[in-house]
Image 1 (spheres, rainbow over the protein chains, first blue to last red):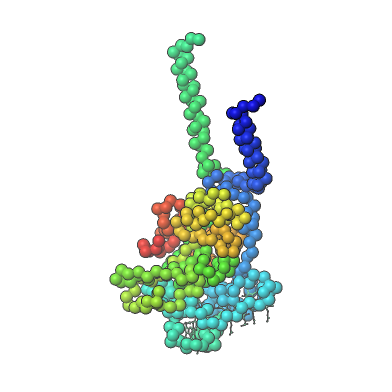
Image 2 (cartoon, rainbow over the protein chains, first blue to last red):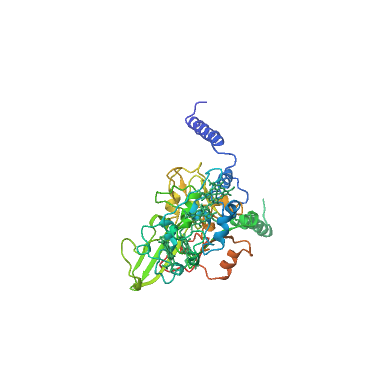
Length: 157
Length: 256
């Protein structure tokens, strides 16, 4: 039957069918199936949550360092720097000691000035930290030439 | 066909019942309620920032960038620390160079020397994704690439994101940015790979002063939950209605 109404209709039906077939192959099976989720906030590819869970951990924490660098850990834990994590100064462990084999030793002044530049802020803990003026306090020399970063207590200098 | 008055009334009553019952049944099963009853009811990650304790060392920003492979030198970051210096004459100096990554090691701001005796308040505020209960960034995503996990963290599917940037525009907090390597929208994940293993986020672990804390709001014994429930805390930009879940102690009106 040749009919000017039916013919375009068939074209539309074929178009829709094609779209559904393509959609079937394009959309992953785990898309939008979050149980207990809702359409507004939980419409996603479920396996992506696993992708994020498997992201690599790089900062391992002080307990890890303690296993091998006992002396440094003991020293810092008994010092005013007790609160500072090793990796703040030495960078992330990642797979150290396998990869990287050693961690960075940064003796720059910048490392220490983050906390020890004196800032005169009455409402901040910053002004309570022992502070120095970097322009006045032995400029040009590395802080660790005089201060022990793992035990900065002035009594032990 | 004849119809008595009694039948008419009866049928009208039935029809009314029949047409309203499913409606009310539908209402009782609103998605939010279903989610509340079915979803993972045991965990809701929240964050607490104590601005009183922050000294502006920037170690959280450094740790976050390294942990989450955010390119170190471009001026993009998932979390940052802002410096506020409010003068006695009402003037304010606010800055966050490179997100505070290298700390604040200079008393001058934007090359202006700040006279110490004129300072009324000076403090630091760290910012990160608020992991909103009703995230605007998720609502606007046209492809379902960004979503909220059942424990409340908003993530981005890097394979699925088309980089249209709607979410970057939608976030009232400006937390999202474009990742120059993966070419997708990027945001703080509350270090999802760490917290689900029982570790702290990189920024929390590396903060020496406990200015940043992460906890589970659904655990009444969690120290963070106790603070949020019992102390005076506030959130940023409450008026946007996104129900942010990063709580602050000691916010000032100058902090937006």
